[in-house]
Image 1 (cartoon, helix red, strand yellow):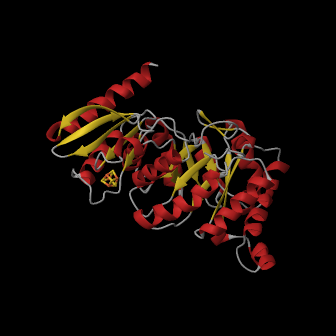
Image 2 (cartoon, protein in one colour):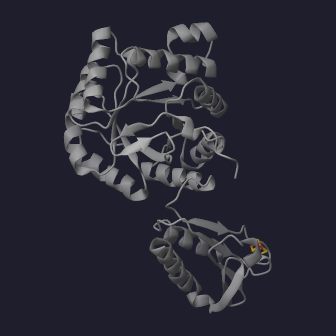
Image 3 (tube, rainbow, N blue to C red):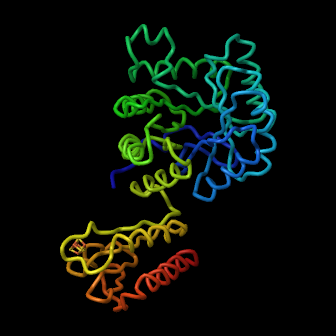
Length: 360
Ligand code: SF4
């Protein structure tokens, strides 16, 4: 695992009961798809996201009805609530008054200085941060004219412009995102931003697409950044149920050893030596361990030829054999189990290991 280099160099910023940046863990974020003024539907979706492992949730605030709903939503959820506002400072003030834990608004888009000051003063009074959201698709005209088209330098310049407005008002609880749907552009922008300032970065590849293609696109872009230690919160944006965004984000964090509360499945691709119905077993075990909040590794292998040895890092695993399975731990066979009961026995062993982890 490469050394994580930048993450701890960011300034710590509080969002609700979480501290973003500093040496803290990276948090998973998502955004609701419901109409925010529909409190019941929004709260229900947030509960599903919480259950899936979402740690921060954002809601759109396009109008007054949405800003009014914030107080009711806040009362019924357990994770920090970010309110996303475009331009309208009155909505920002109302969202802050109603208990938003963070607002996403670009100060340079608010308008007159008094309006910006009003928002900044309200955020200061409540001790909440402001996220500056730079998007390659909506850069300021001046920057586009300078660079000709959206570039990483232009995106960082835009971020610095908004940051300066806040810093001039002595406001420093800032989080920045620099999203682009072009993966290479997003990577370059985030790398440059991590060198240009020390505010925490919220990662995202915007408009990345459907569940399958968007997961791959997000994993490519976000993975490149995570491998360099860049990023303090992240959202996988998908044209899908937002719960899927959380599943993909969790998987991604596990890949880089950044998740301390999720189990990992190792499963073989199968080949002509296969002795069990591996694909359905792997899917069943994956679903089972998705509820286990311990960093254990579980292997499901099609045969015992290279099986246990290949998955030596697994805490527990099963390798297929003719009419039976071999249960193994850390590369060593423990016992044979009949084919009919091997998945159930594997689940029992998984539970035991998870229990031991929590009793440690
Ligand atoms: Fe093939 Fe066995 Fe390796 Fe799976 S574990 S890929 S079945 S040799």
